[in-house]
Length: 93
Image (cartoon, rainbow, N blue to C red; front, top):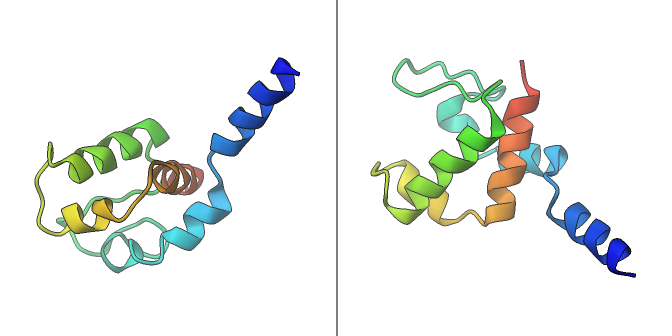
């Protein structure tokens, strides 16, 4: 039984690329529809490592990293949202 509980908790917290894609609609305004920004001062997210994306989003949310545009965007995200977004952008070329 303990094994099935552990497996369930791993599945429940696994990143969901499709959920990340759905959540990325807001991100597309600055970072591009496919994670490639048309604005030179905004970073491309396509192909970034998931851990890096999550780390940066958490830093914006906590205020460790300051940015007047990203702070309110990150504030709305749950940890699962961040994992899903990171999985989606990592899946892009």
